Length: 338
Image 1 (tube, rainbow, N blue to C red):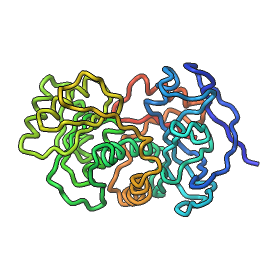
Image 2: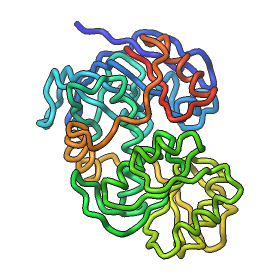
Image 3: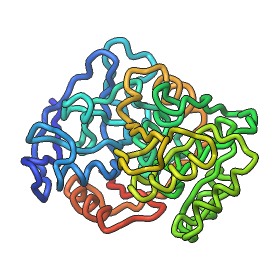
Image 4: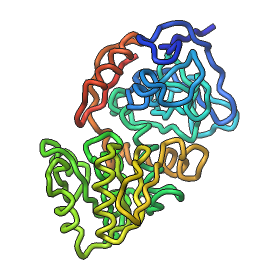
């Protein structure tokens, strides 16, 4: 009989994670069981561990990003088979079920939140994408968010502009790629050292978010353009305030944010928080994870970005990875091989 191990968060605000046995799962309807080869760190992992920033039942297992090999499929699953190489968005924060968490050897993954990856894409590179794809896609294309047109492998230029603040972040860079592949002109921000990187992802113009004139500079760059979407991907309150000023100056009365926005923003502008879990069970999840992403990766149309920084191999390195993330990262994602 197969066995499983996990990195457990045994109680609220405790460290380090404890490595111990976990159940070996059988996939249910519309689920796949993945033997994880790599996992990645996201801000929510640190926030839940150290700040109890999301309601969970203890002991619990964290982790949203995984890549590995399918070992079993549940009833109704036709898109995957044992042996498939996949990336998966682990959705335990939505389900409350630690079986659907990434920081363990085996994870149950919703079939609509997983994609086959090409053989030439290493697991430690593929794993930077799952949560970022869900978050960016929900914000850009969700009906309750910006509602933009879906991405395409051969996009038609739309002569419309999207502003994505924080293009060097994992979510921001993914949003830049998706918006560009949907045919939109993209204006973004990053620190000066990351401008070329964000342009390589598809941004037409990139501005230094540290500049004291960034609001005026972007507002000027948007003159005469049709601004159809504004996404604040960094999550910093001061950035949300600046984005709201830009939106107001360009006739937009709403913006979408990667985190809960502050209340003190420009008058007349509504800021809404869009989260990755909104993609679960939607036609958007099917369109992105099943139809678009596998082909985009196979054809090299979408990059597995940012670059992974692998801090070690084994569940015992997940705590190191979380703490490494907390020290600060720029245009990288912290990854652990399993």
